[in-house]
Amino acid sequence: MSIQHVFCEQGLLAQQLDGYTPRQPQIEMALAIEKTIADKGQCVVEAGTGTGKTFAYLAPLLLSKHKSIISTGSKALQEQLYHRDLPTLQKALKATKTTALLKGRANYLCTYRLSQHVAHVPSDDPDIMHQLAMVAKFATETDSGDLADCVGIEEDAKVLPYVNSTSDNCLGKDCPDFQTCYIRKARLKAIDADLVVINHHLFFADMAVKDSGFAELMPTADNYIFDEAHQLPQIASDYFGESLSTKQLSDLIKDIRLIYRSDIPDMLQLGKTLNKLETSVADLRISFGADGGRGDWRVALADKLVCDALHRVISDLDFLYQVLKTCLDRSDKIEHPFERVLKFKGQLERAFDVSQSGYSYWYETTRRFISVHITPLDVSSKFKEIVEKTQASFVFTSATLSVDDSLSHFNASLGLQPLHQSIVASPFDYEQQAMLCLPRYLPESRDDLMPHTLVKIAKQVIDAAKGRTFLLFTSYRVMHLVYEGLSTALEYPIFMQGQSSKRIILEQFVRHGNAVLLGTASFWEGVDVRGNALSCVMIDKLPFASPDDPLLQARMKDAEMQGKEPFSTIQLPQAVISLKQGVGRLIRDNADKGVLVICDNRLVTRKYGQTFLKSLPAMKRTRSLETATKFLENIK
Image: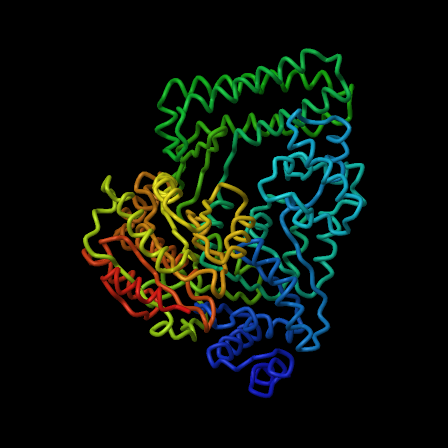
C-alpha cells in the first residue's frame, strides 16, 4: 500500500474519516518520512499547526515492517496519540501492528510501597490519608497500574511519593511483588510490541542508563520519531548531566523511618539519627535564604555558611551509614537504603569538585528543597553518538523548530545531518483568521508601571473578546500582580496557574466558554483549546531566559570562547522558539479566529525584533489597540 493511497482524495483516510480533505504538505511530509525509514537516515520537519503531522508520521510507521518508537514531549500528547490518533489510523489502514504505551516509573503504582504505607499510615495529613484510601481502592480495579487512571489523584497529589517508586528506592528482583509489578508488565508488553509510544524523558533516562531494565527495549527499534522535538536539546542536557536534590534525601529518610517503625522500633538510635539528618538537610536549605531561584554553585561554595551546612549533612549521613550497618542483620529491608545512603554521601562529596570544563555548575532552590546540577553545555556530540550507535532511522518534528526560516540552530544543537529537512507552512489562512497587535505607548518591559499597563490593556481585550483570553507571562511576580488588578474588575471567571492542577484549570476554562486564564511557562506549549473558548492571547514580554540564570550565563560564556556571538547563538533562538509556542495557542483549526497582543516595545525598537516577527505566522498587524478590539468584537 502506498502513502498516496492513504492520503489521496479517494484514499483510505477519505473513506474512513468524516470531513477529511487531502493536504499536499501532509502528503509531502509522509513521503519524506517513508523515504527516511527506507534509507535509515535522518529527517527534520517543522510542520505548522494544522498540517496533520501526527498522521503524516504514523502512516509510514504503520506501513513499515519494522519496530518503531514514537517519543513525545508531554504525557498529555503521549496519551492522545496512543488512545485517540493511533487507533483511528490503525482502523483506517486496517493495520495489525501491536502497540504499547510506556511511561516513566513514577507514573505506575508500586503495590509493595502501597501495602507498606497502608499498614503504617505515613502521615497525619488528612489529604494523604484520604488519597491513600483512593489509591488502595484503585489497586483492586486496575490492569495497567497507570496512576493517571486513578480518579481524583492529580499529577501533583501529595500521596504520589508514597505509592510510586523511583530508580533509587525500587527493589528490582528482590521485591516481593516483582512478578506482578506494573512497571515490569508495561516493559514486557513494550518489548513485544511493534510500535511503542514513550516520552522524551523516558528515552533519555534509558540512554543515560538511569532507569535499569528499560535498556532492553531500546536497541530493538528500527525507527525513532520525536514529536515536539524542540524540547530535545534541553531535556538531553538534563539527563546527560548529574543532579542531586535534598528532596531525594528527604524521601530516603521517610523510607528508612518506615522500616524503623515497622521492623525495628526498639532501635532508638536509628530514630534519633534520622531526626538529626532531617534537621541538617533543612538547615542546608535555610543557608540559601528564603527566596527561591537559581544560582551559580561555584559562588555558593565560596560561602562558609553553605559549606558548613553541607559538611554537617555529609557527617550526619556518614553517622546514619554506621548505624544502619549495625541494623543489617535485624531487617532484610535495610540493605537497599543502606546502599542509597552510601551513594548520596559520594554524590555530596563530589559536589565540592567544580573543576570540569564544558559543564555548568548551578543550583535551584524551591520553598522546601535545594537541587544541585552539573549540566553539559553542549549535547550534540553525545546525541550524535546515540543516533549512530542505533543504526536506525530518526525523524524530528514540531511546529516550532526554525529560527529566521532556518533549521540550522536545531540541527547543530543535536549534531544532526538530515538527508531531508523542510519547513511546512500551516494551511490556516492567518491573514483572515488572526491579527497581531503591538500596542503603542508602552513603558519599557522592566518599568514599575508595566504591571499597571498590562492590567489596563488586558481589561480592554478581555471585554472585547467577552472573556475567552489567555494571558501568558514570563514571570510569576508579574502574573500575580496582574491577577490582583483583574480579579475584582472582571465580570468573567478568572483562573490562575497554581490554583489547581493544569488539567483541572484547563477543563474549567473550556467548560465556562468565556473565562480568562493566567499562566507562565508551562501554559506556553502543549495546550490545545479549539473553537470558541479562546479568542485572544496576550503575552507580557518576549520570553528571553533570565540573564541571571547560571546555566544560560555558562552557555553564553562557552559560545564566546568559541568565537560565536552569545546573544544571537544562544539567547535569541531560545526566545524565538518559546514565543512561537505561545503564539501557537491561538489558532488551532480552520474556523478559529483571534487576536495576539504582545506588550513588548523591543519588537519594534530593536533590530532583533525583526527576527521574532519573521518567525511568526503571516497575520494582519496593527499598532492600534482599538483596531484589535474591533476585530475581537466582530468574532461571532
